[in-house]
Structure formats: structure tokens, C-alpha cells
Length: 582
Image 1: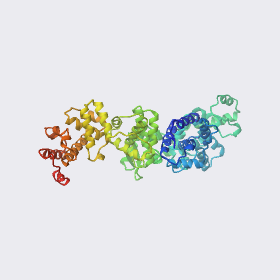
Image 2: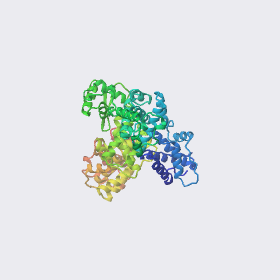
Image 3: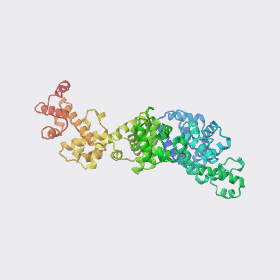
Image 4: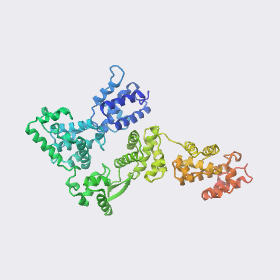
């Protein structure tokens, strides 16, 4: 089939997203998914535009965007050059495309969630209609705020809560109830309600959001003429509007409830803090900042309370990337949802610290769901670093692994090992560097000689040790260190390791492994003595005593004994084992 991510389809996707105000992160995820279809033999080449449009509809639903399938299909058809293109998004097509991407079930459209959850708490139709308007208007103002929630259900809970709030019905439709019915949490509903309220701001005073007969409600938000119409409203409507907006203005900005320790948060009880953690976990990341925000207190006060709970054994403190998370004691180990939240938080922090572009950030976040199945929340920083490096390489860029790992205080090999795992679980082509690539880069950066380059390559070709023991960076740097040593070229090992993106100690260990492998290959007769440029320096000088541990020393000693007149007679494996003390 033709590549589904060719320029024509990509251009149509970009045009549709621009026309419908679909945010960049939703578009990028769709591009990654379309790229996956290259390996699907049963994708109909002639219907690829229908498939691509359906893929965009799925991504939009997953991000909670209130964009109708019909609008996506219509915009896609308009972006095509063909006359009367037949673009339609059906439920059967959505199911088929979801199967391609291993999505268990087609996500419900956010509009249907608004209706379903509103009816579940017995909201009147007029109030559900207000919630629909709030969601649509928030999307029109800033689609990224809508897509930025942890889940579409949480966003829907937020708009239903906001609809109740601006109509003075927040006591009737409580956030705890909405959190329960949406399958999220009270804190999630609070946070989404606050985000949407901050976005819509003074627009919430518009009668569009009041429970009034439909004929009196304007059709579109933000109409400048609406303020003039409001001036002529009857006094009863004005009083109703002021009353509802007044209720919204007097609601605490953080949406805290008594159960969450509202009031003087600095004196919030340990029980209230514990309840906050339990209400957040495992749907969201229970960080110190998260708890402080909900409790309306300082982070230091929140941390004191959390540490006290940890000391009492009621909470467990875990490190999730660059932040601490607090897990209820006796609960299950942090699951994939929490780990994904931690990784995405860490990706955002890395992107900001390292001045990485937004498209790389979106690609990195797009890998998280596939990568966290076997990860623990404690791995968040390492996994996030790996996804950022992978995303940069997929975008034809590069990031220094050493710089990324240094920013978080772990070894570069952790990133390399996670890249190996990403390569296995993420259905995308992640450019990888092998040991030979590392050799080329290091020799070039350190301006080493052609002789060192040639010997580095040769030692890698002859190495038959356990290559899985080392990352490509460690093995390549080890080969360069070996070649420089036997060529009597002075190198700064720390600088060499940094150029490779590896830890110095592992580079040295890799070099020792290469020495052992070459010495034993020489004795076994796998390589000819005359074809070894390194033998004079390594075996016939004072250099060898300075190299390696006892294993390396034994291998060198065996090779020295062998070269003292027995060069033409190989040694069998059993004898080698005895000589090595195995």
C-alpha cells in the first residue's frame, strides 16, 4: 500500500486540524498512529483518507475534544482535490481503526458523556445543555485547556460541576458525586472545574449559561453585541444573573470542600491530608504540590503533614522523577495510570529545562501509554528521559544522553536501557546508534588519529564477549579507549565517556572486556598473531599491569605465555578454563 503518512495525507491532516482548531498534541499523536499503519497489510490503500479521518476522530475523542465526527469528515473532504470525495466516519470504521491501534474500545464522544453523566445525577435537561455550551465554548477559546485534562470523563465532570456552580446548584450536584459517577475523583472534578472557570472567567456572567428558556439564550458565546443586549435585559433576569455569578464569585478558587480540609489550610488535620491523598490516588499524581493546592496551604506545610503521615506508617513516600509522591499504605503498588502521570509530568519538566521544542514533547508523551506497562513510578525520570531522547531522534534531532541524565542524577546507561525497552514496546521507528556509530562520533569529537579509529573498529568486529552487558555507548567508548591505549595516545577518560554519553566506570569495564575477549581469541587461534597491531604494546610492555581486574590480568598473562614461542599452536577451551581459574 502507499505510505499512509505521505505528504498528501499529512497535509490534509494539518489542514483539517487548523480548520477545526484541533490542538497540536492531538494532531501529533494522530501522525504517529498513521505512521504505524505502514506495517498493516490489510489497510485499504484506496480508502486511506477515510482511515486517516477516523484516526483523527479517535484521537480527538481520547483528548475529550467536542468535535463532531461529521465535522472532521466534512473538513477532510474539503481538503482533498478529488471531486465529491466520499469521506464518512461510521461506528464500524471507528472500531476497525481502533483495532489497528490496539485500542480496546472506541472512546465515547465527550458530548455523549455530558449527556450520560448529567442524566446519571438527575440533572435537568436545561442544566445539561448549559454544560454542553460550557464545553464547546471552552474548546473555542483554548482547545489545549480541554485536551489537557487527565481524562475526558474528568473534563466532563468539570463542565457539569461548573454548570451547577454558575446556577447556584453546586450544593445539589456535589463534586464528590460527579467524581464518583464519572469514575474519576472529587479532586479531578475540582481541578477541571477550576481550569474551565479560569478560562471562561467573566464570560460566565453571560445569560447563555443560566437555566432559562432556550428562546432567551444566545446561540454563540463571546458575541460583542451580547453585552448590549444584556443592558436591556429585564430586571428579573439581571437579578438572576447577579445571583448566580455571585455564587460563583464566592466559591473558593480551589474548589476545596470540608472533607478536603478547607478553611485555614495551614492547620488542616492529618486526616484531611490523608483523605486528599486517597481521593487523588490512583487517578492522579499525589504530589506535595497537588496536596498543598487542594488543602489551600503552602507546600512546606503540606510536606510537614505528609511526612508525619509517612512516619506514622499511613503513607509511603516514593520518588517519581523529580518529585515525591505519596502512596496510601497498604494499597496496591503504584499502577500504570499513576506511573504514566508521573512520566508525563517529568517529560514536561525536562522539556522546559532543556529548551526542547513542543513537537518533541508531544511525541514523547505519545509513547508513554505503551511504555509504562512494566514500569514503576520510581522509574518515571529514567523513562521520561528515554522518551524525550527517542522523540528527538524521531524528529531528526538529537539530545545528549549525558546532559539529560545529569539533570536528574542517574547514570546515562539507564536511558540507553530504557531506549532498548521502548524499541520493543512502542510501534514506531526509533533511530538507534550502535557501538560503531559511537566510535565514529567519539573519535571525531576528540580529534583522535585514523590509527585509533581503525583499531577501534577492528576491536569491535573481533569482540565476542557478552555485548548485552554493555550499552552501545559503553562498548563503543571502551573500544576507543582500548585503541587509544595500545596506540600510546593520551585521552582523558572522563571526557571520552562524556563524548559517548556513558559513565566512566562502565567505559573502563567495557575496555577490560574487550581486552579479555581479544587475548582469549588470540590464544584460541581465532585471530592471527601477525594480524594484531596491539600485541606489542599490550603484551610486550609495562602497560599490561595497569589494566583491569584479576580476570583481565589472567587473560593478559595467558596471552603473554602463549606468544612466548607458541604462536602457532592454539589452546582449547577446556585448557583455557583451567588457566583462567574457572
